[in-house]
Image 1 (cartoon, helix red, strand yellow):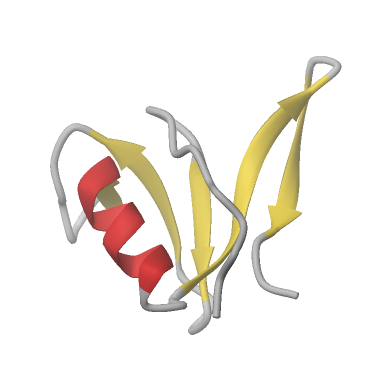
Image 2 (image 1 turned 90 degrees about the vertical axis):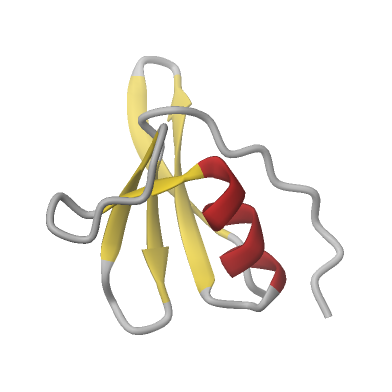
Length: 67
């Protein structure tokens, strides 16, 4: 069960349990690996997204979303 609240922003990167990476955009796009924020939240609720990017002190780092 996921208890952490996650905020997906445009141009964030997310990694799924199967190792695929997607960029958060306005619409889903299979070929360019872009998913919408709505899809990202849905995938997160199902436990499919394990990491997301976050900007910390000017650097992009990945934050683990699953314990």
